[in-house]
Length: 156
Ligand code: SF4
Image 1 (cartoon, rainbow, N blue to C red):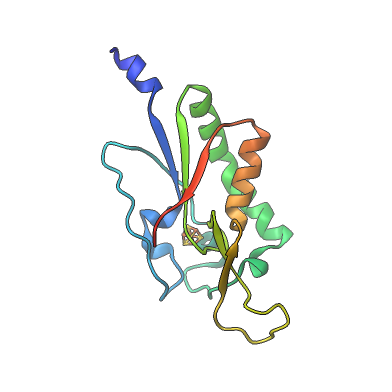
Image 2 (image 1 turned 90 degrees about the vertical axis):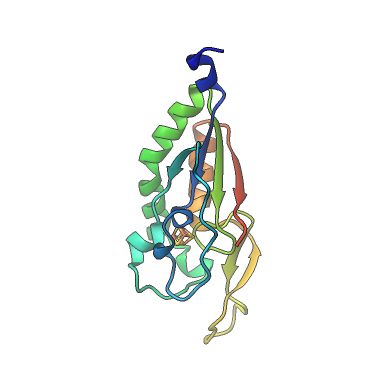
């Protein structure tokens, strides 16, 4: 099979930033297992929380990140990546996107939420079936562009 034909069948892995750079995580929380990149095509997304709130940010719930400002920030951050992904998809590549369990930004199946909506002083977040804010924006933008993709979460 020619080099050109092989290239058309390749998968492009689009992964949450901390799967390759765990130092982006909120300090003191569990780090995901490093993503195996050998012989893979990998696009490492930026870490929205690190850029938006810095390395000393506190652990927050999805509700706290779910503001128009943070959503707009996430979308703006993703747009150049959306351009790359759209072009690769239209060139015949399969797009697989991997997020992080319980992340309020990068969760795919679960995102951390407040334990009790009426509680003023929660310290621990629990997880609900929801996507994180960044991954919701990613999903919306790729659907808007009619890009085919699959989304899953890594194992923590
Ligand atoms: S889960 Fe997302 S927001 Fe959280 S550290 Fe990883 S890349 Fe950053």
